[in-house]
Image 1 (cartoon, rainbow, N blue to C red):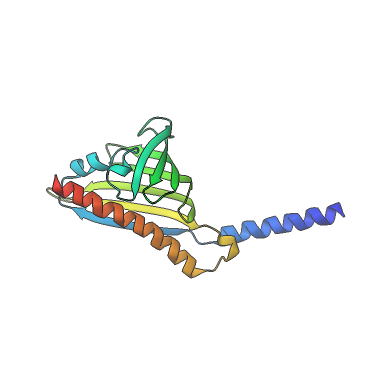
Image 2: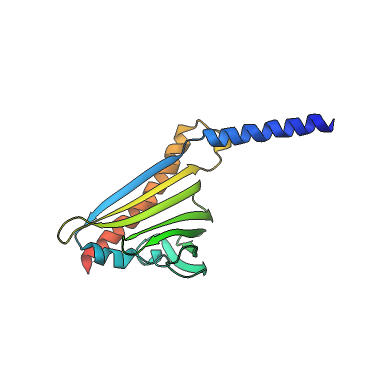
Length: 175
């Protein structure tokens, strides 16, 4: 009896792993051109503990582990409407004006999420900011081929990115 239940458990585990592996990795990128030099825009966006200073959906952003802008730092974001997101810094390149992070836990409807923010020069007095995310939607095992849920996950991340980039542009161009 034990052998049958062990085999059944193993088969169920493999089926779950296959379903997760078969789930599509989703990617989205939002980019905005800002009428301000890249150094100025980077100065506004560069701090891992400063997302709340330019993203309108955030009430607070605090480092809860490690040191700001040092790989391994963990920040806790508190949303204005309630809820939190805990993120870990994976890469930080001040000279290249880029950082990459992952979500450890939170209210966003995605899993296996990594994101990269970059600020580049786009000619005299202009910059281009790109925010790219790679993720899977949560609960994919419940319905692996659900394209509407995939679209909803991408739309949610796009909304987060666009809201932040629009406000970053507003702040950078006002100063």
